[in-house]
Image (cartoon, rainbow, N blue to C red; front, side):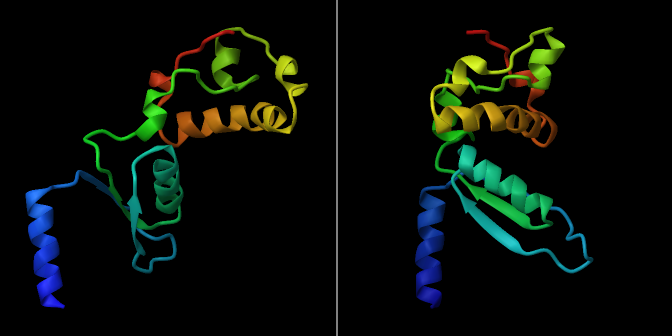
Length: 134
């Protein structure tokens, strides 16, 4: 109803929520779907990227003034043995110290390098990643 729309508009005016928008034309020439992603943490940003790659118009609604959520506070890093970042630094790492830790660790060893490649190529964050040897 129009009363509800007016109330929502007044709440939004009193408490603005940062939002970030981007769009890409659909690959098939049809108008792109419009999608709202709630939350600009790692999961929300990943979802937004996937949707953009599929040609959707994406709006991210985030309560904080910066994107990243709890992931932006993480300092332990990503296990990515054999990633291009390691190779560029002359590091040879097969993740053998992690593979004996169980299925979750093996999945990290297997998927970590692909995740880093996705972050660096799709999101373009290579200049923000720092190689840490443990």
